[in-house]
Every structure is written in C-alpha cells, then in structure tokens.
Image (cartoon, rainbow, N blue to C red):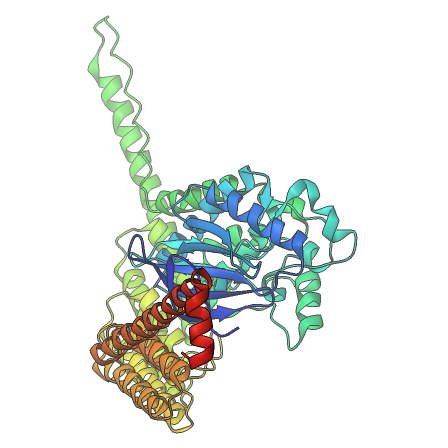
Length: 559
C-alpha cells in the first residue's frame, strides 16, 4: 500500500519516513492537536500473535516515563486489521546519519549517559532492548538523545522462547557475543551494544563490522576490542562495556553511570595538589636554666651538617636532572615524544619537574613536544586533505588529525582553520553529489543516495547553508512540476504523491502547500457532490416505492 492511499482516522499522512521487515513508519499530523507524529504501521495483519505482541510492547513502552525513551501517544488498528502506533516525531535525525564522525568526548559522554539512563528504566521493568544501535538513537531539537524502536524488546523471563530455537535478533554490527551466538540475554547485552556505539563515536569506526554477516559475528565473539592509548580515561570503561564475558561487564546501567561519573572525578584528582605535611615543632626548652654554649654548639653542628647534607642532596639532584635531560633529548631526537609511556621525552621531562617544578629546560622541553606533535598532526592532516580523505578511513583522515592537534591545544588557530576547510570540502562534495543525484532523477530516494539526503547532511553540519536550502527548494519545485504534469494527465493520485514528496524536501514550500490545499478542496467538493447525488437517487427510489400510481406512470412514459 502506498503512502498516498494510507488513511488513518484522526491523522493526515504526509509520507513515508522509512520501512523495515515488519513495519513502515510515516510522518503525519495528528489533527486534534495539530502536532507532527511518527506512525509505525505493521506491514501485514496475518500474524495475529505478532500483532498482539506489538500492542503489548507499545503499552509497555508507553508506561516507561523517561526523557530518553520515545513517547507513545496512541495505539490502534486500521480497518484492514493492521496495528499501528503513533509516537513523537523527532526532527533531529538519528545517530546513524553521523556515521564515521569523531565526536567530542564531552558530547559522546552526554549521549551515552542519556541512553544508559533510559536503558536503566527499561531494565528495571524486566525488559532487554536487544537492538541498541545508532539508527535507534534519535535526537530532539535540543540535542537530547532518545532510544526508540522497541520492536524486538523482550521480557527477560521469556527470552528463552527465541534462544532455544537459535534465533538471533538485533543488528549484527552492534550485537553482543552472546547475542551473536543465540544465547540467553540480559541487560548486559544492551550495555555491550552501547559500548560499541561509544567506541564508534570516539574513534569514528566500528572495529567489529566485517565484510559480511558471518565475519561480523565472528569478530564480536573473538576479536578483542582495539582501545588505542589516545582514548585515555575512556579505555577502562570501554574495556568493561565490551568484555566478551557478560560477567566481566558492568552488572547494570546504574553501575555504568556511576563509573562514568567516577571517571570524571579521577581525571580531576590527577590535577589536584596534595596538602604539604606539617613541620614538626621543636620540643619546648627545659625549664631549668643552663649554659647556652652547649646548645649553640649543638645548633651550629646541626646547621653545618644540614648545610653539607643539603649541598650533597642538591649536587645529587642536579646530576639526576642532568641525566634526565640527556635521556629526554635523546628520546626527542628519536621521535619518541610521548610513547612508550615510561620511556619517552615527555616522561623524562616530567620526572625533572617532580624534582624541580620550575625547571626552565623541562618546561621548554614539554612545549617543544607540544609543538612537534601539533606540527606532525597538521602535516598528516594536510596530506589527507589533499588526497580527499576527509573523514575516512578511521584514525587516518584529515578531520581526525586536525582534531588530534586540538586535543593538544584546543585553541590552535591552524587546526581550527583546518577543520573549517574539511567542512568546506565535505560541503562541496555533497553539493556535487546532490547535483549528480538530480541529474539522475534521484530526488528523494534511495534514502541515503538522493539529492535531499545530501542537502540535509550539509544542513546537519551548517544549519543555515544557503546552497543546501536553495537545493531543497529546487527539489521541491521539481516535484511541483511533476505534480502539474500529472494533473494534465488527469492522474490525480500521482499529482498528490508528487506534492507530498516535494513537501518532504521543503516542508513549508508555499506553492506546494497551496496545491495540496486546492487538491483537498476539490476532492472534498467531489465527495460532497457524489454524496448529494446518492442521497437524491435514494430519495427518488423511496418515493417510487411509496406511490405505485407514479411508479406505473413512470414505467409507461419512461420517466
């Protein structure tokens, strides 16, 4: 059934947002409240048990009151027997649209916290989501991450109904090892899936994704997660989230949230100064007056010993600093700036600062390391930019190296300018792809290879980009022309379909809105005319039955 023929009482359907194996999702307006909603409709009414489970799960999700869980407004049945549910429409798109991007650690932490907090509520109700993946994480206008699509969520007590038949439900690229092996699942499986998403946000790639389904499953079961040292404090949390054995992961999402909170606290503690131990007070002088000479001699001896000791310590400290400086310079010359951690130039310079916090050579050495690292990152970034490697491959692209430079110096002007040039190149590439899509008549479909898709990607990076906005308007006007051509053929359903598609490109296009209103007005008039004709015919038939003389007269004279 096409979206133009879909009729849901109380809703005006605008078009299809997407479809899966069991259901389709449409954008609609709830007429009673004049609000946009997303409507999920089962594609078939034949499996009554699945329909009943669909309704049950809708009721469960509707009872989960949490800002990071999708809000359900209504669940009902169409005249053809198919069930549907109406839920909030989230215009911010999903996380899958930003595949391959590197997220700022603060934003990645915010998203994981929000989803983990929502999952905690889901797990408290005895449910496991089973399909935590980027496509099921949507965003509101304010940036809040929202978990959706509980279509495969199952009660923990009846999970064996699936696993005993060897049915693996979920998305292979984000499935836990036990899920990939069709074993019984609990909340820790969702934590693993969330860990894969977190790793992908921080590194720009999913290391478990293989060339085919089988390789992906094998990777989840056998491949140890690559956790580069650049992840810093994230490594410990990710190691537990992505542990192969469920027993080695966080027991639940609340423990995970506590670990995320503690990770920040530990980072702060590393920069805190420890209190200095109090000096021991000298014992009080004896009350009995004695000659001061012995005391003065003793004090003089102590001062002399202290001076000699201090001089010896100073000489030894200077020798130690000199040796550390020599080692630091050797490592610097060899290019061992920060690795290995215990045998690098940075390590030895910092050892000097432990002995002498104001050592100028060590401080200058650390600055030279920062400058050398930034220069190396910028050089790599410029090469990748020249080669057109903007955001891929992961950890070896222009965007990645510019961001690595900013991790060293968040305000570095050349790195910030580089990111702007990467963005400009990505925008130019998308504009070119959009033009090609228009030439190939791929205006709205396929969903991830159409002119509208490429223009909307640009607007995700630069919300007010003039060329992208003009491109969407251009697509909308092309659909206007197609609608007018359909009207000339008297193909009114096709004309309405073109109008609706044009409004998907530019929702507030005045010409298309006016055409849709005029189409609806004419349709309403035609329906009214048919209703009046039917009423008149029924009345005449009834009058003929009630007046036999008139009926005979009409039969004779053909009236």
